Length: 97
Image (cartoon, rainbow, N blue to C red; front, side, top):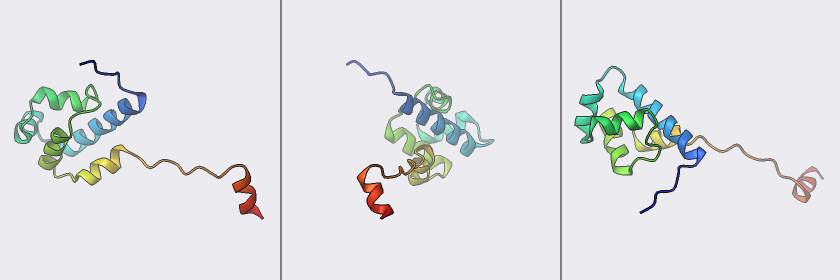
């Protein structure tokens, strides 16, 4: 199976995820966190450093649970809302009338 390269957006999202997990882990050791989540310390290290930009959902769910993070909080943190675009063309003109 050939794995496609990550898009720039996926890489950025992976970096935000890693930063979030590092902040949430605080002073807790990486080894303790990984073992409590049932993942290898190397997997957690790769996620936290952004080297794994698209980790498996069960992996993130397990780590988030150990760190006391809701999946909703994780999702909203790593996927900032898209800026609203202004209408253009005829729609904008109709709004101004």
